[in-house]
Length: 278
Figure 1 (cartoon, rainbow, N blue to C red):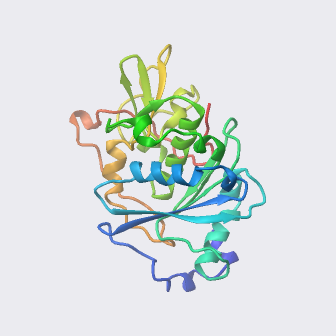
Figure 2 (tube, one colour; figure 1 turned 135 degrees about the vertical axis):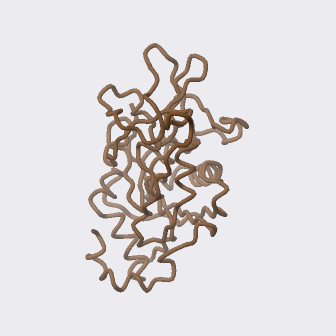
Figure 3 (spheres, rainbow, N blue to C red; figure 1 turned 60 degrees about the vertical axis):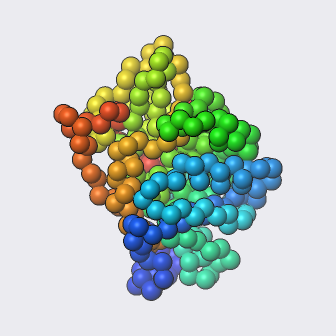
């Protein structure tokens, strides 16, 4: 939709990175608002955590830093939802701005607040999220998540911020909210990135799940988070065929567990404009 402001769709098809083969490199580049870039270590933390969460067997991962950009607001959701960041990415792709996007996911991190929805926004190949100050305060990934394949971490503002960041990257790669699941671990209920804090939202729609059965009862349960995509999400990511100006859609592979459900659970909701921390 934003492409009309920077060039015709026809001209975009000539770009070298219009498509990619699923077996090739997944390229992710991260930019920071000028204010976000002022936090020591924020780039290293984003690079480290994305390197850990996106290191899947489907591709060779390349995560790079694009530098800082001037923005009109630190409201990350607004920057993408209202077109400012998508327009900048498209202009860079057409050599009309000093910004070099990559084929698969172009993420902008701002210093926007993480207390009030929306806190991030993702569309095919483009995403933005706030919380730079909280992400900079994170412990190293290996210290926080350990060697558990589920990457379970405590429920706190820094970890919620990085989970929203992974969530928005998921949208950029074609995942939907119903690719997220929640599971029990002892007395804790733990959502994966594409579900996130919606698991504790009583108004969240849970019918017609893609990835499993109903969300477990969260009442009087400890809150934790998982930074790992669900098995359902990983299965669909294996079908990803991207490219900056493709539609970014995935084939939705039906769960194979008995009864048509995965071991985890997930709701079905396609909203992309309320990615929230509660």
